[in-house]
Image 1 (cartoon, rainbow, N blue to C red):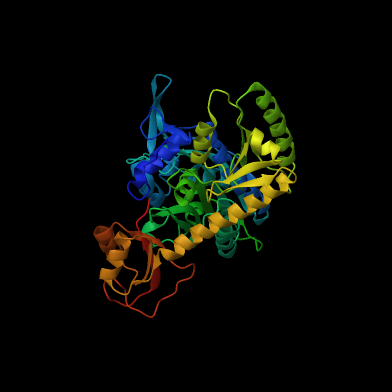
Image 2 (cartoon, rainbow, N blue to C red):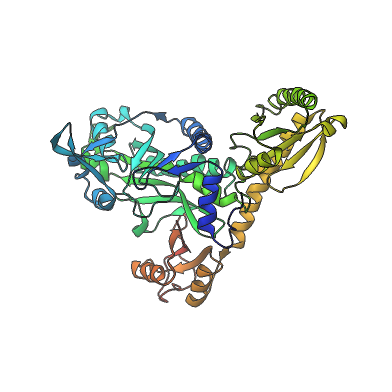
Length: 479
């Protein structure tokens, strides 16, 4: 199938890749989607990468209910105000009006901290290091598959600590050791990390740390957030403990999450005009074998050779390779080539009688499109090396793209120009006032995507108003 060109209509290109790669489709309720097997396999790969790192840092998984009594949400005023426009509420069930409405979770801080009040009495009960994988509902006005849907899949970590220092360290550790490590090493997407401006913080947070990626249309994508919540939720829900000196203290909190929007980020960070380009570390199939034959005799010979190749490939490398033989007889080889190209499989191996006569196969790389004859002997190790190179190449290409689209304008007019065309990140001095944030958004549709991890007043005036700067801000249009 022919895809729209990225350069001509990026949104249409994105939609057609999601459809053509058979990743997902819109469902019946507005803003919901069906994630199809290939799309869900990609999400499962992301889950494994994140979950392994979460558990390696000492956290445990658990599960809390989807329904939250509305009264719980009202205890933390800033939190409920921030989520009010997105909340879905159940008022009737079992044919009757409920005595108390139930909120369908937009996030779980409220119900989890209500439970923590029962679980924490002493400093010995801390820290609580918990995470859950679940779905949440936030009423989305402009849905887009994977990127913004009314219901979406994610993980949300919620921790409680004795001290502010422990909680701050936790929020940062998750950002760097879990999120950034997984996204850069597995998804091959480079990210910039930093703090959110006050207007962009998570409702109820003291500080929100984030990682931002740049898509091929030069818009930013918030790829994950980690929040330091201070004692706000502990005070709202009465989570107090006896400290080591026997005094009652409120616990310190964090929460953090990434969602299935990372699948959308993967598409937009690496895809080209032919479809997906999946990093081998994440691809459901790292190599697909396409047998080519014209007669029954050829079919028997080629099929037998493919079986031997699978045995070689599945035992190659440190963990073996994920391989699929596309032996569907109802489709011609050209159809299969196109389908696996759109679906982004890193390596395609073509096996025909002429290849076997030469004791080789044809190996095609999805990232570069190069095709070469490779000896059958030792093919497993050859493919493993190629996959390692593809992983490195995709990350390097994305890093180059990010650097080429990071600008340091010296005037407001220049800033407006680069944010509009070519787009990307504009790094500037900022006075810290929301009035300047609002002006940039009105003029360019761009917002502050991140501030440095530590406040770093630049030796320059605010690029918007000329007042003394308090921080260096990275601006971009965003999803």
